[in-house]
Amino acid sequence: MAKYLLLKHYRGAPASVNDVPMDRWMPAEIEAHVQYMNNFAARLQRSGEFVDSQALAPEGTWVRSDGEGKPPVTDGPFAETKDLIAGWMIIDVDSYERAVELAGELSAAPGAGGEPIHEWLEVRPFMTAAPTVLE
Amino acid sequence: MADDVVDEAQLRDLIPGVLAALVRRGVDFAAAEDAVQEALVRAVETWPTRRLDEPKGWLITTARRCFVDLARSDTARRHRELRVSDEPPPGPAASMDETLRLYFLCAHPSLSPASAVALTLRAVGGLTTRQIAQAYLVPETTMAQRILRAKRTVSDVRLDRSGDLRTVLRVLYLVFNEGYSGDVDLAAEAIRLARQLAATTDDVEVAGLLALFLLHHARRPARTRADGSLVPLSDQDRSLWRRDLITEGVAVLQAALARDWLGEYQAQAAIAALHADAPTADETDWVQIVEWYDELVRLTDSPVVRLNRAVAVSEADGPQAGLAALGELDSTLPRYTASSAYLHERAGDLATAARLYAEAAAQAHNLAERNHLTLRAATLNQRLSDGDC
Image (cartoon, rainbow over all chains, first blue to last red; front, side, top):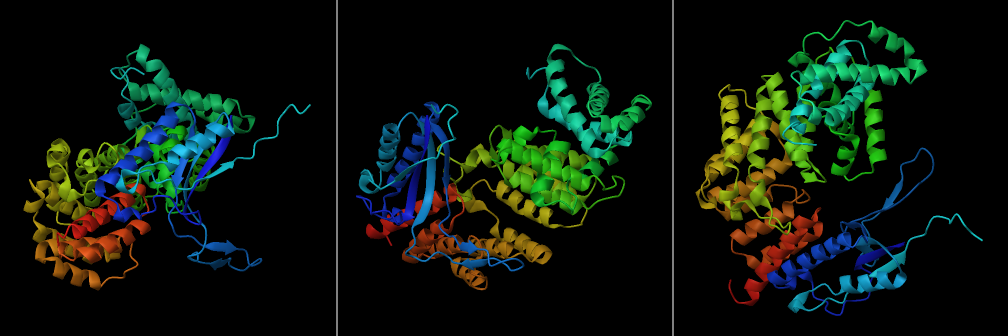
């Protein structure tokens, strides 16, 4: 098994095929979308491939140390041009192919007009623990 | 565990008294708390097969044995073992005052809110560390460490000094507001603890808080749809509201108000009671609700209360009055934009309302609220494009 992060962006990803802001969808389309997302997570829980799913608020701040005895330096909120993560799902699957397959399904969540959004999701493999047997 | 033999909530009601009994016999709080947890585990294993006449006495005896076992396994604690072995057999059950002192200890001002919540749920509530960790979505080791540090922090606090009831009420309020996830219903747990606290003290604000919990909990079956989406108060199916909880909440509140010592929890409960009293949303007595918000502003001077008051004013005196009240507030307040969107919608300015709902959705801090606000924006945008304005 290998863990993958399916990463969704508010900004910074290439534009979706069906790229309409959500508040311009029909109300029933929003309900269908939410239902699809709930069902997707529930299905992965049943198949034993779900690990975690979280959403992030859109605001954020850069922070770095400014040396001992001084408060950290902050810079933010993020500039409009910054790549902005919206949330993620972590899955634990048998293969890279399966991770890509699931990301494809998630990307096909219904959007405006009831058509799949075809949004771009980032698939990132987790670093693993060092194996016990090397030779 | 067979429910007909051991009722877990009933079992946990005994915890504060058992813990207090051990502490009274000279066992330090942290060790006593460990022993009581161990005794609880044994109770759950033992009781289904054996009915007991004196469950509390059994728990005290078992917890004492567990303490001796734990102390024995730790040579550094041998002196304590000897001391406890010399103790007389368990005396009468711990008094209510001791229960109250445990609440004070677990909500001690030296603890952070998160630590006070965790310690209260474990030491007074009798929940396991695993249950608390699941409820707050943190790893069990993290929660265990938080509880351990909290116990160390209060280990030097003397149990016989009276504490501040306000901090206890704030802790219970935090527990209630967390809602529920995992297998522990934190709202129900907060109600259970508030009931227990109300039985130990005649403080009117304890009664006010209990009434507030009951009246809000009564709405829970109507508050979300099967898919988890939020249903606003005005759209809720009121036949789903729990009449039993409303009746109890109103009775608790009326008894408290009759004592003429108003506090913020009683005022909040009074507002909830007025909603509970309205057979339909249209029949809500908004004029009286605004009066209660005025009381709340006087008691708390909280900007969040002023924001809610502005919404109530719009219901009582029209959306323009509500918008005027809103205009006096800081626009960076949480939910300001969502409230502003709602008031503009009520005033018939659908384009502004739709824009503000979308803006509020982007600021929302939970998904259910974000979805709800996005849906409002979409609904208004659709009406606008259909020419319905």
